[in-house]
Length: 378
Ligand code: SF4
Image (spheres, helix red, strand yellow):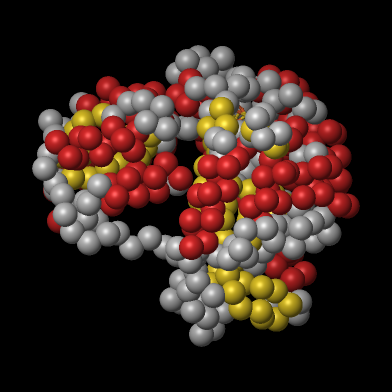
């Protein structure tokens, strides 16, 4: 999301006009490679784009990991490989060389902005290809991040999401700032009503971070990837925590940030997962009270420690995914019922009045205008 936004802005700055995709001479497809399915979907998108555009530029993790799979799609496809920090300039160079310039600037959504504070990951989860395609962890300077946020406030954005591949690794050693300092400094910027974190590893959910989340300008929501609730599977995944430690961190978050809403990612059908282990994952999700679960059926990725192994049948993965989604739906519905009758501040994002509370619960506000914060009784 942040990478795509940066490419759009870089092209707009260079004077290129964003038009209806069906009329575009150049299309940029930012790809994902986190699962085999994600690569297949990205290939489909590239094929579709190549039918109408003169040139298709393929960027993102999919381009870095499996560039050849995209180059084969059509003769007018160019794969742009490189670290995310360089890709907007590389794309602008390609588009400039094609002579596409001029036009009105793109209209960016003005409600929520995504600001990257960190990129890459130095962890070694056994199933994950991200460190191979995005490189080791590195942070932006806090002053640059805060200047970007102030610019967003000036553009009329009310909410900012701090993003990173392994966000809790953010550190500006020169300024002496870690993520909790940055969070408070961002929330103090004039014009910004809310700051949220995109996703954070449980190892980084410290008391200092939870303390920062009690600032009135920080959203009471954390997305903490759990991946499994079974210790044997977590060890096989090299996840650096046991289920009990994960659940203790969740309990601490609820204690220090009253009303916090928690969501998560879970991988089902990892090679080490049997039915008992999956049962423990269901129990952990229930105990943690996650209101939304992004379920990823396990998919072996090339170059990872688990890359050669995929013993769990697809039908079993599909069944476990369904059971986990049903549980998440039940927990999500209970959370929405618990909010019923309470006062909530909703940042309206669409003409239809759809928006989110500060704990990231979706609500529809009748008559709400996009970009406004409305106080309602849920
Ligand atoms: S922490 Fe996240 S990005 Fe890093 S290796 Fe593990 S799953 Fe991948």
